[in-house]
Image (cartoon, rainbow, N blue to C red; front, top):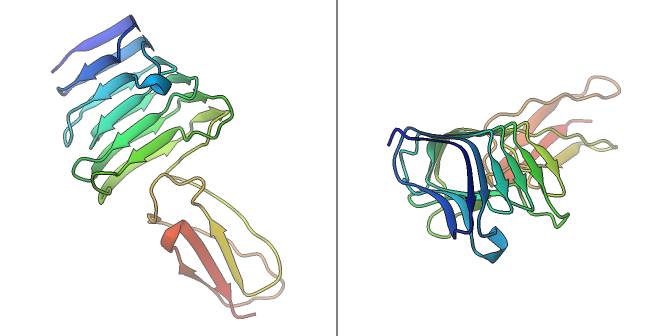
Length: 203
């Protein structure tokens, strides 16, 4: 607990940093250890349910971050190179107070998501105050908790599928939409299940 790791380069280790206590700060840490593609992990947060750690202004060099049931976790200002990504691993299905913002991700163009979920043990059922947004992505698949989209055409029903962008499946809590049409049709938001927003009109 209560440690600071700053301006440090980690080389040649299966796990670069293993964290099992709260209130730690990692800043300026360059994880250049065993690559994720070969089974390595840059930073492993193994304290499910009460994480309370900050990872800022660091460099994940071909190796990523794993966080078990993260509660109060900040990852920002960090550069992820070589398809390195963040994995949120479910132990009891809890993820709360997580901010993954203002990071840079650079990959090889294989469509690897920048943030991924491991729900093999249990699905994330307790999700609250999670923000994944404002990340710069090149050569990887962006994931976010905020998304926008548009659709046009003739008809009375319009669907926008946000599954390619949203991190959590079937979890849209708020929708704001604008309908532009000839005349003044009656319109309504009909459904948001499966991360698909459906708006219908009467004409």
